[in-house]
Image 1: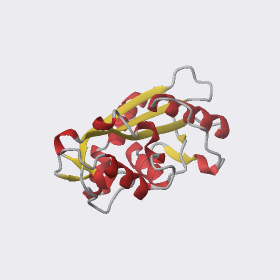
Image 2: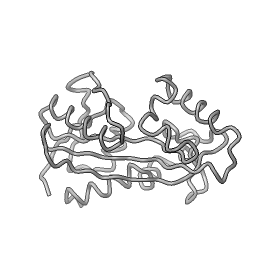
Image 3: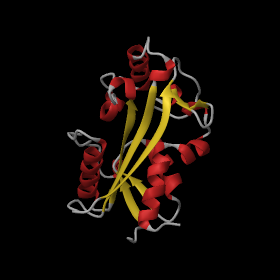
Length: 198
């Protein structure tokens, strides 16, 4: 158990900051790495875990604060786990719409039964840049890839991700519903337990 009042989030993504702050609660203030630096570290890891630790260490080094990093993405069964750690830059960094279009194209003739996928989130928390014992929490959210986008909420691959337990796409969930079900929510439940947050 560690006593934390402030954490720096190793992300410039305002949506992610808002989502994670809502899940963490009010006892810990989450600050963006953007307050300290605009430089993104090279994500040279080959797994979500490696990249999350790399980003957390970098954020702790730059800010001097304990740091939380989230490395997350979409792993599609038919594509052998791709786009995986390359989810955000699947279409060469051209953004969400291009990523979604490329994914639909890759699965064009794949039947529904073979379109299984999971959103993956790995949260890594380090007390300082050289912390030998990072806290690692993983969340998986199972679903499948729709043949066409549906819904207006969320970001990334949400419009293509079918959520079986709600019978709709992730982009059709309200933000509060998504914050209870998502891969990030599942990882955060584990992190809150590890930190002793009620």
